[in-house]
Image (tube, rainbow, N blue to C red):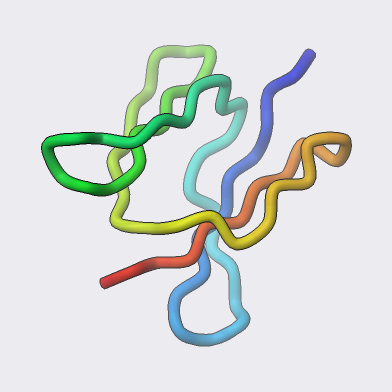
Length: 66
């Protein structure tokens, strides 16, 4: 499987779990943020940019922009 766990980093180096089993990440034109969706259909839109994408480790870290 190619799903990833997405974490959000705010200000500090501490990461919080945002969403598991993510299969879609794309820009959200309406908000300027990122749209995430997992294999169960759960969706989130976050104001963030990519910090680290470790696809072989199935781990993505986003950095909050607000």
